[in-house]
Length: 434
Image 1 (cartoon, rainbow, N blue to C red):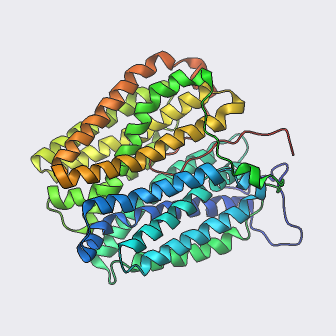
Image 2 (cartoon, rainbow, N blue to C red; image 1 turned 120 degrees about the horizontal axis):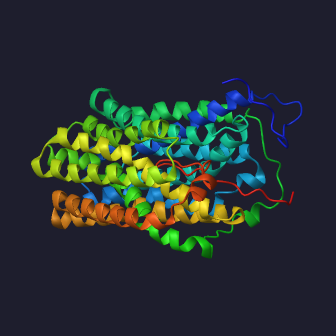
Image 3 (tube, one colour; image 1 turned 90 degrees about the horizontal axis):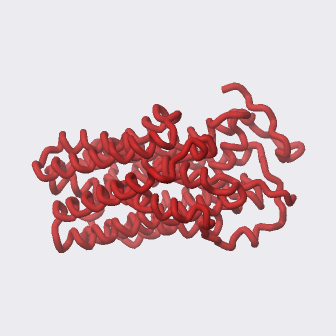
């Protein structure tokens, strides 16, 4: 990519060295991928931690869930902070918090350390979400959707790479519960130094405290469509949460694959496929996304349940790939539909409401699944979980028909739509005030 033209209104510190906008764009894309890499890295290790410290499967899902809840709370309170204090300060703070969480993981001596590390990761990712996605849009070429596309690819790819690389290191490298975190810590030190020299694109406006007041609402003209798409948003993110929280346990218990690599591969099958689909399906219309995505996801989940019933790991992996193909379009279609129906002045509020539901769906159902697993068994819990996901997606797919229109597709054509289980690319409402 050639150097990007300087944006009108971009703020540069006089006399201070800075890298080009093009270099900054790719640096931040890498930072986003690393944040999600770090988020997925513990997934193959949960069975190892469980054997070391003898805690229940419910605790494993709770360790996973606190990350999503911390991320959600941070998004609500600090999601737009970089619009008011500048991108660089927020990004530096977020990366340093992520570095701290990584070091806590590296030195963990008990399950309480895992909770602390996941909370730090959630806060860091929540802080970085709005700042990175907004900066990528600030720095992308004019009349381009490259920022939204890289949000999709970097986040989905980061999750997939984090799971598979962590699985490989745990299975074949020394210090299985430490090495990946020390490597990540070194990477985040480099990213911190890089963020210090990116161009600043926002001037502080003195309204930082006002930006910390969370507001979640849906305007009247969007509420019917919001209620219609709510089941799909919930089902999609809940499925991602199940794979990240219980994927390794499912491989070990149901398919007798005890290697941590298997736990990483199952996440790759879903999230990696979703990231590739984000590239291949970027020109799908809303109607195409809302028809094809749920159908593929429903098919994948149904076949995955068959794989669990027959103890066929090959069938389960193939089904996860099918579900991954429908994974991104199911959510992105819902997001584009709702933002297309939203007035411009309410669009950020609608997106915030969508992600409140999304991150709750990413965390709460996995805790319930962990609780059910201890009483009903992993297979029964998986069947019930999959059945609910299929029912919710079917309900939303049928209900969305009356909300689709060519006007909606045109209005939402450029809305950024990241994959479920990743960070949110928050659209920004341009204010007339300085």
